Image 1: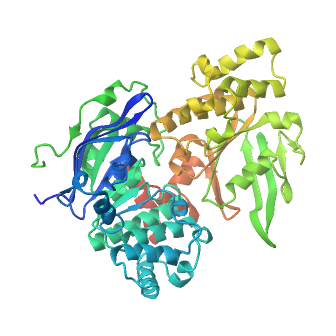
Image 2 (image 1 turned 180 degrees about the horizontal axis):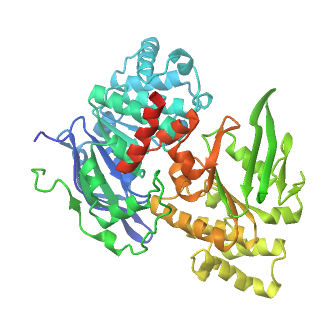
Image 3 (image 1 turned 120 degrees about the vertical axis):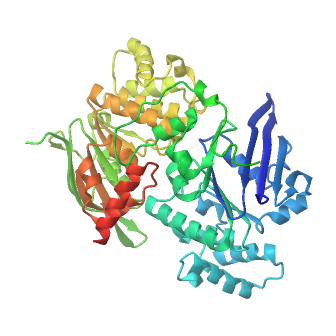
Length: 293
Length: 269
């Protein structure tokens, strides 16, 4: 088996505060092969977003954070890199898409200027004019036809769906190896969300970009990911290829999650068992014993 | 004769947006039968919330009228009207006063509308909390000390406190985690017959609608493009916009995938 692009082993995270150490992650292991789409699904507070932030190298410099375990990106341990080296990866080889596109773009700069900044991260000498040509090209890839108008607009002049496409275009502009997508499209209408996901899937396939897809929406995960990790209170509880996991969820927590999702085919509001003790059952790995590390 | 608790008759609403008029609602008519749950679905900007605001009396319609229990609702609502029609909003953290304890927020509703004797109200607050499956001790807590699902239960309890007849639920569960959402939806569906409530359920989540509503009205750009009983609308949607909406819902089971596929094949033929 080839070397994973991202390899997280026994990752723990705690925050030191007035009341002592609050443990957030209790040793999670996760890997992503080059070009693979992997989802991390869980409820709010389960530790999905902090995992992405660690991969992005944004918590390592936080004084109150206590991080254990290893995160290797392309064979290099993130903890052994300097701050500058980690920063060098961001926006070039690893990039991120956030949930709310409008608030993650800077409202006081035009899209064009922000695009220029992104492109300069990879090639510092990129001129403004060159950047605009390149940006227009990338925007056309995300099905934005009037690229000139968009580049001359401020984020608040564009719709949420349009901003989301701009974000995707920016994130993929430097052809990263790994894209971290934190609840992309959740703030958008269903039809726009569906278009956004289609677009993202097409682009990452074309560019062979690996994706860590973070979501609480099981339906979206099923449609986007090749492989799924289910996280509950800082622990991975179930892992497997998307179809296997959805056809045969084995962990009590995964089952409860799936029961709770309202069905388009009806059947009423499900009864949810209040007993959460079963949710701490050990990890169910659909791929265990299939030669994975 | 139909027993409509609320009927919306030819309601239009135009807003003035810096010189040009924006038609948020265009000649909308709807009846909501007493004791039923009507879902209003549509994308952002379709006029769902404008309709809710008109029903609640936050602003009057530009034309048309709203009948409640057979009587037209006045532009300036009476105190009785305001008690009868209650709202549960999407984000309970912003709809509950952060400086007031949960108990005080509920108590205020009772005080304002003069419900029960003064001496009884403390017990009424405890009973209300129990009715929404919260421990009575929560009365002394601040909203910030509660989880999202618990806060939403408080918002529901406040609507119950007013002994309302119609509750407008504006995306009541879309900010909640799926397990919490299921429990809150269960509570809402149990309270409706128990308290003889009528719901107007505004949401963009069609899967929720399928499981909680009796009827659905699909809004697009201020107009109703399709309306009908929930089951019929999901199994045989007639309007292309409705099909598009249902077809875009991310689903998890093979049965749902089959339903979606059947909609798109009809589209192509």
